[in-house]
Image 1: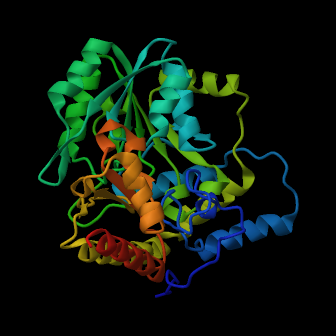
Image 2: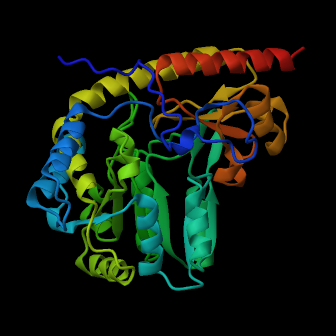
Image 3: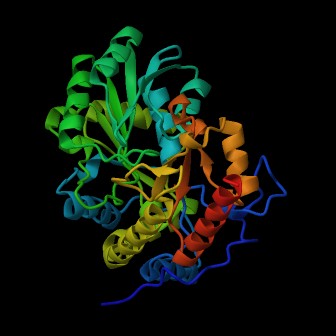
Length: 391
């Protein structure tokens, strides 16, 4: 079996990578970056070959979505998740954040309420507010190291705010929850009872750890599919975020027309040629690479878990994603001071938990998609900072 290299560091400094740019609050700090969700690994060789073939061809005119593209994308979800979406239901967009913003405009009016779960991927709240909609929030409950949904509050927020759209993160960023089929079904039933459309952001679906299984929201039932936009992309799985390509599945023809109308109003009608070539190569040839990547990431998670034993920082046991959610509340620091401790005290750039919502106060998010040597260096810095603080 082909072995892929997840250990050799790749110098990304000076490449334009935002991950390795200056920290916005501490621009002079010497930091190791464990923040934004891209990976420090070279892509699948087949992707590079496909992109090189496009470059060698030398013509970059307009292209449409081919049958080969639809087959590659839908085939991936059929093989990996037992879900066979209709190829005709596929719509491309330049990224999931763009896709969520489009859904907000397509399915709600100014002043309507959009529901999110707090804490959650921080652009969601901003998109709701920037598009003139009301933000409704339901708070995930942390108990015994495990996040749960308060379904009574979930329904109450929908009813009290007359919510029109629910933006779900599945698997959940930043907490790492992989929602069970039962949890998803209860959310679907509540949304159906109140006429709520669901945008299910499933961009992290390929990163699920042993004992858990990702269930596409639209695969719960025909009824769930009829009220859902499923957002997917190869960008997280195959480290292609910079190519700006994502794939949505909208089973219901009426919802699909409404979404396409809003896309057209924004002037978007064709995906990036290179993104399409990379996507086909990734989904057709990338599974062996992904298998190796998952094994490497599992080792990184185990190393971090071991390092945090007997420290004041607790790792919330991850069920999915390569983004670790660190409970730092025992340090007793306010959020600004907590971020300063990591940046100035430990020389580490993580995402501050408070940016994901009020329920993220006292937490930090750490990206482990890096070579083991980089993680070991980060762990050593954190251990030194904790030891210095304890003196």
